[in-house]
Length: 459
Image (cartoon, one colour):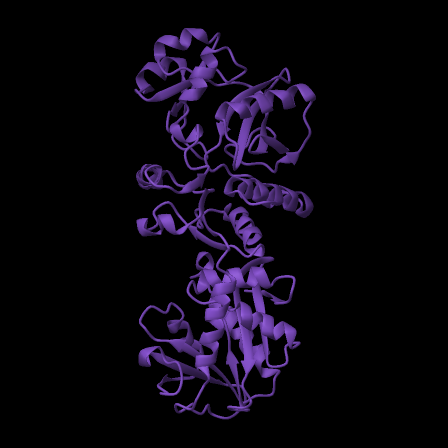
């Protein structure tokens, strides 16, 4: 695995501190980072680790020549939780060892707390060459739970530290001061499914908030209830599951979360939307004569469709990638129909149009030709006529969504008319990874400002 390393400097110190806070929630490296910058990296140097230009962790090195001029120490090393168990931590550690060799020291050492909760300890055991308990009564030693690991950077066997003073106490004092400096930042929870291919877009969003110094945690909908009120805002993003067999578990956990948060004083975005309550709204819009795909919820109403030989059956609560959707012939309809299904005519169309909004502001438009399902062709960015833009914006108002993302999907019929396919205001996939970098940055900044407005931040 090839990783990139970005030196922590004045331009990215907020991002680095936010990443560090996510990994070590009760500790703050801000003053350590600032000291390394202010002293031109003479005794310590730190990096943001990236994979495909997305931050995945941190690492660093520092010397204490007044204590031991043969050693260099690993400082503020860790991997963001959403990128763990992928081999990234090991690669960062191995790369840091290579960086350490350039300093001309004999040993790389690291100090850690052995309280039984460390997720990095198995990694240290597999890479570092020796470890030992650290119990120096003149230092900060976590009630005797300290461990020191050593790796030889030369041809000699590594020597133990043997409980010499390691100056951990001073580091802890700096962390306390850093916590005080950082206390006014927001705690943000992004709900996302890190197993989905589209997770990259939520990693972009997390990075954007972290660049502003806010603490960002990423969890799926089954996270622990005691975390609810620890966050200033919960942003529902792409939490959908991609396999039909996972939908029952997802629906159960998702319903529990929505009900639970509805009882609490927690700000949420895209959590409970029109689309999240099923597709019944399509029936209502069709009854109102709106420019929408014909949709009914009982067989008796199919006489509203003209000259239809094949139908689409959808579970009213269906979502994502056409899960639960089936095509049936006219003669099969009565046999296949079940209560809770929606019925739509199978239509001939040229393409699928997706209009992407932040709140009520149209940001960009993608066209899939002939359709995004089931083969997902590469979409093209397009512009719409003023008439079609107005149509999209009118349907965006149906959800009454002011904060967060929403996507309005249309079918372009063979006569070039647009009809509404669905309104996705409940964690829609926004295709951010397919946008060029400039447009993506514009969209992400607009989204951030939209969320800050909701939080009451002056922007």
